[in-house]
Amino acid sequence: MQNSESAEVLSDQIKRRFSKCFLDILILQLVNSQPTWGYDMIKKTETQYQVKLRHGALYPMLNELQVRGLVKSRRELRKGRARKVYQITRDGTRLLEAYYDFMRQLLPNKTVN
Image 1 (cartoon, one colour):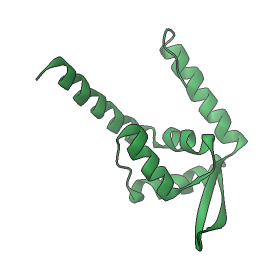
Image 2: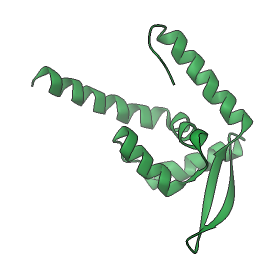
Image 3: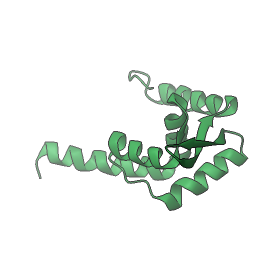
Image 4: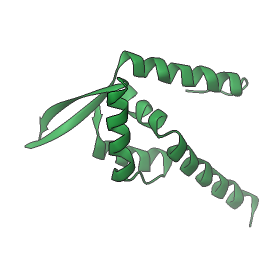
């Protein structure tokens, strides 16, 4: 295995671990930029992180985040379809900022955000 291949394999492993262990943070990052719906989150996760997010993991986490007051949702009609659109709350933003602060402390010479 060449160095570039092993780095790629390791990067993929880290992405999968992050998406499993920090799914709440991943979702908050996605809805922080703009309100969005579940299917769009799945597609963005695949595009941005090359990780396939399953419905069975996403929707229970969205419900948990909503119960905890970190995201809120509303029903929206788009192209004739009702969608549940999620957006971050003030408490969700605070949690995300605390995560970024922690990462800056953990990696002081790296840019986090």
